[in-house]
Image (cartoon, rainbow, N blue to C red; front, side):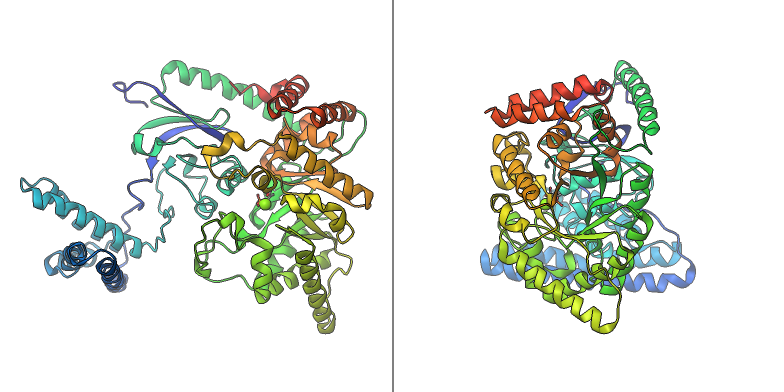
Length: 591
Ligand code: PEP
Ligand code: MG
């Protein structure tokens, strides 16, 4: 329960994943390591000591390298600072104590190392001598380096050793870290930076973990152990909530439970408007484990399988066999509904550590998605063959991300033809008629949609990127989040252009960006003629709920208004009004 001496404090940010949770905070900003004590069987202690010694050797190499670079760039005096680190790495008294602890108490290396080294640091902190006190920060720096190596932390948080449930608070969380979050322990998370459509936010929605981002300096102001309530509907984190606040949130939980009941009732019903327009409503997934959530939320298959998450958080690339197995499993599990597999979209805010991609100044404008794949034909070929093999299931479609012009589309299609010829020659079955589509998420693609439409079987509008590229507003940067406006007339016109081009060429156009899962914006998309929507499985029931209460004619009137209105705010207000009037119970948790 909250400490009675501290008052309630509310921090406001951007709500990115709905839900409320409460519990103790774990701040990841200062301490990136979670050290738990593990008892080892006696026969494992020698191996543990060896692991510890390897980490020391690795750390020594890193410190020497760093010292060398500092010497070259800054000079001998600055480089000398690292002598203290090197001396500590050779301090026999310290090291012997650690190995003794591992051997005699049979504990894991990081626990023994941290316990002993931290005690040294504390003695230094308590010293009267200023010089010695300053050495404490050296030893802490070194502790952190050794722990990085022991826990194999690569500038990422290691959340494998969480032992109790908590609300994570940190400056940032990468999409790959977020993908590892274990819902058993992580009740929710809050970060200083981030935006509504960053992949971290998308992962949170997909996992169904309440999350708030863009809280500015919350990771510095909160402390591990603080008791807080995180409100992922309204984008707040409330530290030391009062009894009154807790009561209000208790009421909210009751309202939400009754809404959940209503949503469950329509789970098996189609997404069809009151005047009979059926909309295919499918889900976005990140890996095969998400299939369960797709079915549980009544989504009609998968409209976007973000395959890059198969490539993240591992030491080697998934080969053709592994990919084919995963894609086939997903397709088989969701039959007869379609599964749209998107080819690899690495880059932007999604990186794979073992590929050692060079850091770029503008990663979202750089070597990402189809650009990366066309430059890595072997890697791309393995994925294309795997998707083709899975297409034998009969319900697979494939699409390319980040198409900016015709050449990329032609090159990718040529590679597909080559893969098909190979498979044919090998006698491997595949669906020769598998539909191939292009994502429309770069303004240039939307503007030449008529040219692209003649070469593909469908369009899937990636509004997350389309908005950031059209409005030059980084989707992960909370400082420009006010400019990231889905109802900007430029976005509405680009969507309309794309949909019209698709229909003129007899193909369908869907939206798989986050706006498709927003009950405020989904009606506008229907009014603009969008044929299919795909969103995080957890929000599919809400979108279905509102579609079933609307008339297509109402959405068309809304689109008509939007196409003639100059102001993004007014368009948004009109969308919100229609949504609130149509489905008030969806909005009862919003303040
Ligand atoms: C998009 O850009 O809207 C999209 C669906 O792809 P991603 O979010 O993975 O970039
Ligand atoms: Mg995209």
